[in-house]
Length: 396
Image (spheres, rainbow, N blue to C red):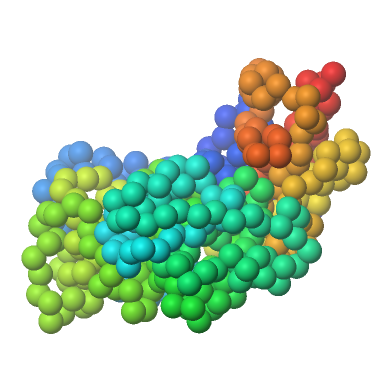
């Protein structure tokens, strides 16, 4: 499994990549495989040519197929999966529509994505609640240490727990099922930010046991921008309503979860039909799933594991950068973060990396700055070498 492996060289050639850039940032956006780009472009061409025929006749069966394929890929029920633009839209839907008993609190870890923290700031202000964060272990040794931190954070005031399945700053994978079990025992609702999880790690929506789960398909699944989802857990289907009222609002309540003529269900259509929009990113999700299934999910995970090992070797073992992501397989996915020296100038470092055409985010944390390295199957050891050499040169 080295950079000269013809299988991975051929796989990389099937992805749209700028040949001058070392793209080590799938954690922000994934590039599109050629077949995915061609599929979404063909759909958009048909939408442009004859919008009425496409939206009224061609799109509905494609939308249901996409829903079934994504639900099957994530081990969930298609009747509970509503497509959204992204996880931000999913979380905002729940935060704006969910009504929680006041006084009380919404509980977050201290590693949540900044924009989602702001989302909950607004939500608690509107409902007369409080927002509380608690610290996670710096570099946990095992999943139980993480679960124990959650147990210690719960209180009788906690109404809802919001946490990321995979932490954006460090790539730490949280034991979602065990955390949700602990919350449920205390009558606490759970909403999971699964921005990074689909296609990075196996996701079992039915088995996690959360009340709500939002996710992105434009990162590790390599689907088009604009493809996200909100999953409604069992028993929470009626807790939230759509943010917009459009033609999906009035519907037959006796068949609320049955497939309808629009490629949806009456319940899900209320969330998805926000007026006129481009559904082509949603309809292209099956092409993204097919592409990775042809390569082989287990084979992809093996390739990612090899690249992570090489990244740790180059940046930690050889360059002495302390890792901020645990090495244990059950605690990390495909993103590995490292602590930068306290003397680093983040603005200059970001500029210096891009001057060398390297895409890797420098992330600010309370304890200092991190460099986060994303390694998908299309990355190479040469790109990691390029990053290591650039960091060494910029440090000097």
